[in-house]
Image (spheres, rainbow, N blue to C red):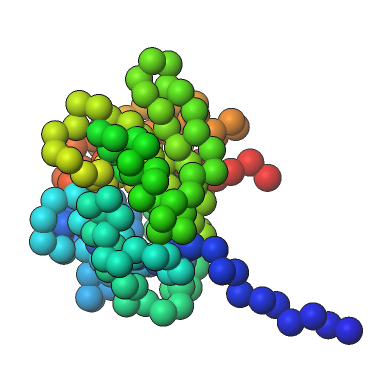
Length: 210
């Protein structure tokens, strides 16, 4: 007997809104449609939004009510994940979204109430805690930043999976920093410099080992 596949009921990252002109991402080798949308790894990134950096995220199957500890969380406009595709620069997906907070316990509790309890935490060599949670095609990385001004958590940036990081370094040259080992075992990462013109912090990371 063949069993029907059941849809996961776990929280899932659906969309990110970013306040960058679409042409800046196109210049880095991303394919962007006429509406300013960039689909990557089952996540839709909406470019050209008002504000700075990542302005909001949308997640399926969460109890957010519009906000998670100050992080704007509107209802997703995309009901189903967009098709998976490889961009001209070799990008295949969003690896993780970084959220910083002045109060780690409070933000972790807010994620828990929304249905996204952290699955793992660790100490960062005297620099506070770090927590992780998978949300479908990507992960949340929560970072304690006690020096952060303001009462709420904020979006900091994202890491994008790319097939060949060495080739991307040759293409982007000085816009991309030096490649070095990532925290995740067996992976390498490089951070995009401000000269690329993007407002959120962006890094490129190699795929997870087979």
